[in-house]
Each structure stands twice: as C-alpha cells, then as structure tokens.
Amino acid sequence: MMNYPGAGLTGAEHRPAVEARALTVVRGGRTVLHDLGFSVRAGRITGLLGPSGCGKTTLMRAIAGTQAGVRGSLDVLGHPAGHPALRPRIGYVTQAPSVYTDLTVRQNLEYFAAVLTPGRAHRDARRDAVDRAVGDVGLTGHADVLAGNLSGGQLSRVSLAVALLGTPGLLVLDEPTVGLDPVLRRDLWDLFHALAADRGTTLLVSSHVMDEAERCHRLLLMREGTLLADDSPDALRARTGSDTVEEAFLHLVDRAATDPRQEETR
Ligand SMILES: Nc1ncnc2c1ncn2[C@@H]1O[C@H](COP(=O)(O)OP(=O)(O)OP(=O)(O)O)[C@@H](O)[C@H]1O
Image (tube, rainbow, N blue to C red; front, side, top):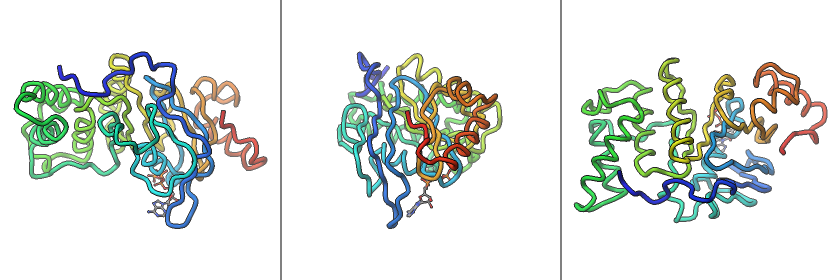
C-alpha cells in the first residue's frame, strides 16, 4: 500500500481538523457567509446541511482554499486554508465531476496518480492505489469503461475515487450522493464510515437532504449564510424536542426568525 503524505491523523485527534472564527465570505459584492464560528472534529463525519443557496459550496470552497473574498480566520489541519502544504492532504470533490470522458475509469485514476506521485519507482504503488480507489467506490467492474459512457452517479464516484488516491486526511465532499439510488447511497455512506473508522479520515459532507443528517456524527446546519447549529444529531433532536433532524432544523429556523440573536452556534 502506498505511503502518501497526509494519511491518518496520528496524535491529532483532539485538535479540530477545521476551525473557523468570524468567517465571512463576499461573492460578487454580496456577503454570502456571515461571521461563522465552528469547528470540524478530526476523524469524524460532519454533515453540512441546509437549503439550496445557503452557502454550503462557498464554505467548502473556502476550506479547500479555492474561494476568494474570505475574511476572518480559517485553519485547516493546522494551517491557514489555502496553504500549499494542504494540497496533498485535502480531497475536494465538487458537484461537477472532474474526469476525462475520453479515458477509461482506470486511465483517469492512473493519470491523477501519476500527477500525485510521479516516477517509475512508484509504479507498483500507483497500481495498488488505483485498484484500491476503484474498489472503494464500487467501480471495479467498470474499470475499463470509458468515463464518457458512465451514468452521472458513476461519474461522480470516479471523482471520489480520484480524491481517495492520495489518502487525504480531510475529505470535502459537495453533495456526493445526489442522483444515486438508495443502495448506492447506503454503500457510499458505509464507505464514509469505514474511511473515518479505519483510516482516521475527517469527512465534511454536504447535502440538502435532511435524512442524510442521521448518518453523520456531527452536523453543521446552515441557512442564508449563517450557522443555525453545530451539534450531534441526537443532541440536536433532544434540545429542540424534535423527532427528526428536519423537525429540529425547522424549530431552529423559527427560533432564529423570532430572535436572530438566538442562533445556536455552539
Ligand atoms: N460566483 C458567484 N457570485 C456571486 N454570488 C454567488 C456566486 N456563486 C454563488 N453565489 C451566491 O452565494 C450564495 C451561496 O451559494 P452556494 O453555491 O454556496 O450555496 P449552496 O448552499 O451550496 O447551494 P446548492 O445546495 O444549491 O449547491 C447563493 O446565494 C448564491 O447565489
């Protein structure tokens, strides 16, 4: 197995993987994230949930270091967001799959593996890493299919496999389960839990589907560029007296509308 940089989180479990203070982002002259303060626990799955347009992608881009107009403090794996040392340590999967449609699944992964770890000396390790990543996302049977002939869900799994090649310490996944059938969705969530439990990977996973919240260890609930809650699903339900996270979310929205100072960004 390949010994890529950034694997695991040796001794760093107590330190948050991401820490934001007074984080504000301006896009096109508009403030789209307002003074956010939160942390993402290392080695856990944090769900970033909220309605379309609330700022999930913008927040993920800020964490991945690809967003302009970021103010305040944002530390990622012990460095300021965007620091060059973070490049091999973060796997960021955007909503639009970034793969070459005229290459097969395996050729795509071989290409990105060669960019990550070039040189003949690493050839065997690259092949192992490619086989593992293809298997991780359940595409072994499609390894020799042209990416252009895959379905949307399969394409997004190829993007995820590319992100897994480098064994990143932090995986930032923007709506990874959109368009997947229930079986594939379940399999992907099983993979996320295995990555956190077995490899110590920290996952930040966005979704606008509230039932996915139940699969996360922690939740960041967003609305209109603000944070409504930073808590576990159980604690969130308990302190809002709700049966589901969706109900808890609506409760917090109503409470914030009555008194905006009561947004619960603990
Ligand atoms: N390039 C841009 N310039 C100006 N405003 C933008 C730009 N891109 C997005 N926005 C605005 O920023 C806000 C947050 O958008 P963002 O894409 O982060 O939301 P989201 O929660 O990820 O939405 P979705 O779930 O639909 O992907 C929205 O109001 C959007 O209109």
